Image (cartoon, rainbow, N blue to C red; front, side):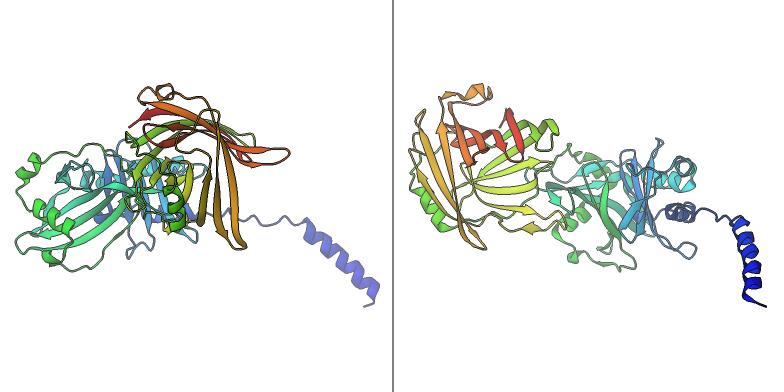
Length: 462
């Protein structure tokens, strides 16, 4: 066979192959759907059922018939629900909408009709929390009297710690409650924790675990909070009804260690010999508007500044509560100059050390009296990798006005300051403050920076 014959034979075969329609492959099943179909007929793990009113969260544990772990968030009466399943990127929602965690409509209908959801809602009735105490500045210990069941002589009951201060966690999450289900043998004075979960103040479970094969242990091995809850749980059920229902609680911001600054900085402040404030300011509630550099406009954002005095340094501690800024604690000179700070790392929830590294501070002008139409200034020295870096800030003092013009609840006089932090031939970074003389605090009024423009309004005072 010569080359010409080979070529003439190969060409029709190639054309014939091209004309054969490709075999259609069925679309790949969504991995979330695969998990859903495996777990929807499995029962909820009893020790995982968290309920807040009508909302319920529970886990499906692996079993001989089901290798998967899944978590469901659902309503016991309304058509809403989500399922989260494990992936290489962590727990992901099974949804057909990237902007929502809701189940696709067909699977939502299956969930609403399922024995799994019906049984979970029946097993964990709407909680009736009762508090051991409700002191305003401490964590509250509470138990759910509706969750109490007796099995083989053992009392199983859900308990909770309603936190006085949020716990910071990865991302922007804040934990408000710690839920724990206990198994208690009141006669033998033994117990074991069956499960524990961290919950936000909307009832959403952040994380938690179910304890498998944990043995009963002596009550003496419980921590102090558990011991108090166990003692209360072992009282007659009629006693629980006499316990107070805890009021609705919004925890305070997460607690941070007090920032510290250099002794030389504190010495410079002490040389000013400023008088002690006549009144104490505990908190300010603001609303602010912003026009940021990319042209985006933000209006009416809420912010709360909480004030306290650091007993060691004598300086003002300021903790802003702002969904945009996250949680920070600032050591300041009367709210005007940030001397040191601490915050939480949003990647892991751990505390972050001071990022300012202020090592020096000096003042010029009459800071004691802040005369109208005068000028004062300060130099702030920070340690950097290339050596000390000094920022000079100059402030012009305006005409005094009644502090009640800023907010009717404020007393005394207020002096406006316009401070220039950085100036070039084409732009200037300025910040505006009001100095509340009777409180000894500078409160922010405006900012015009390279990042945008902000204006603050004081809504309320405490």
